[in-house]
Amino acid sequence: MERIPILQMGDFLLVTIQVDMHDELALTLQDDLSERISKTSARGVLIDISALDMVDSFIGRMIGTISGLSRIMDAATVLVGMQPAVAITLVELGLTLPGVITALNVERGMKLLRDRVQSE
Amino acid sequence: MNILKSGSQPVRIEQDVVMARQVARKLSVEAGLRLIDQTKLVTAASELARNTVVYGRGGDMDWEIVEDERRKGLRLTFRDQGPGIADMKLAMTDGWTSGSGLGLGLTGAKRLVDDFSVESAPGEGTRVMICKWT
Picture (tube, rainbow over the protein chains, first blue to last red):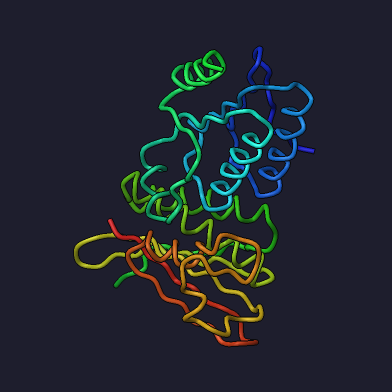
């Protein structure tokens, strides 16, 4: 089965979405991530969507769910790299991703996660 | 209005939703839409294609590159022979869903395009037309 790879970097999990995801693939990623957070006791998840040229309500909902469930499992999720056209479209669609932490790029996202862990 | 080019694309299974948005992207580039408008149209197409598969039990996406005196556009029509929409007013309400979605598909798609129309009756399927102009 097709899967989106999840990399571990110390306390954090790193996901780079580089394919146009069909709905089932998005749901698989959601399940895989929750399992990996539990298995690795990760403190943070970084999701890089800079390669996505479109985020619709389904993918948006998946991002929100991942962010919510990781919070419940004591890990923070940071979404990075959203293209400007995608951001404008998402807002117009009616999806503002409440509660999801975002950063402009991977570097800033990693810094956000590290700062969070250090401040605890 | 002239139709410069037209075709059709099956929207039957989940993977067809991905195909539909890739086709919509390619055609919106060809029609000369700017990036932000391409993204809006492709996102609207994704929402409507999913509706066609999930609620309409599968159907087709007809596409046309059109032009009038001043501009070009891409027009997409999603049609299915599914159960149809019984209460159009309710279906066009933000946040309302008959399924498990967010209820943003139809209303969100409408906000993202220049022209939008929907025809449906119980038992007679649904037909949603969207168009984005340059």
